[in-house]
Length: 129
Image (cartoon, rainbow, N blue to C red; front, top):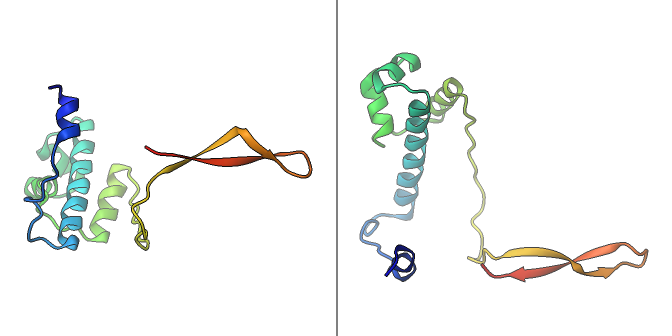
């Protein structure tokens, strides 16, 4: 069985998140993303944690906490880190969607309808992914 087949046939596991609230799971995921981005930037800069700490004006222990997901960042600390690293902090707050319908609509110009003035009006075609 190929790796692709194994992935397709894999069963969803919840043991990692059992007992955690949705908020705790989301927090863990977001902290992991932030930590990974900081670590990626350090590596891209070709710096060790010690060199990076000096560049950032913090201790090597603080860099270690950032990268190991042990630090609960504030918006202020994230903005300061992003400013030093040439990154933009984007916080996206929105109402959750009402459905899990994430299908993509493809506009098909070939099957377009004609408007009264002769211009083409695109007709949406739903494509399942």
